[in-house]
Image (tube, one colour):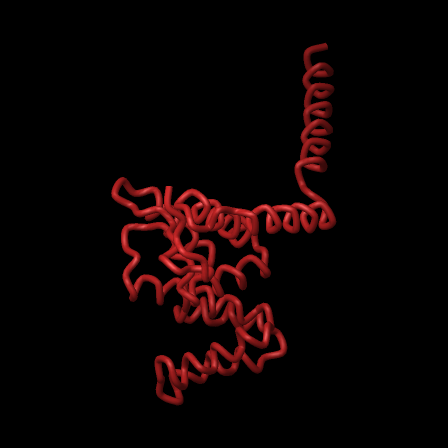
Amino acid sequence: MRRRLAILLSKLAGSLITLLLAFAQPSSAQSDADWAAGKAAVARESIGTPEGCQNIWEFYWRWAKNGSVEARVELWKLISLGWLKPPGLNQDTETLLRHHYTLLIHNIASGEPVVLEAVERMVTVDRPMTQSSAKPYLECVRARDKSACVGSLVQAGLVADFDAYARELDMLAAAPDAKPASCPDGAFHFPRLKK
């Protein structure tokens, strides 16, 4: 009797877990709707305030960590334009360049022309590399399977794995002396709002 009860409970628990996972996994349409609604809400943020800037960061960062290519590209644009500084212990130029380059290289997989052009510019103009050093990046720009090529850059140690990068950034953002995400004066072409 105990064995039958244990089997029945096991089957019931398995069915319940399957059912819960089915509802917990958003459909693609639901995810697209959530992304569009969130992006519209972020556009209405008071970007001249620290809270608004933090909300913008949290929205894009959450989607970027969950694999949204569009969020990663948008985040790269915001950081590279100097409109958004990620949270962390340092917001100096070298740290911001590291964020810029890490996101840029991972965004090769998007195939976005602006990203591919920026990678070419990075290795030839912005931070000129020797021809042999630039070769793996340029090969990824021209590759058919750009995602696999970015994976090879990760394997070669030329860029951090995105999940490891995200964990590190989250850890630094949670440090006791960490600075919150910030939008410098003039970011988004709006003057900083006074309280």
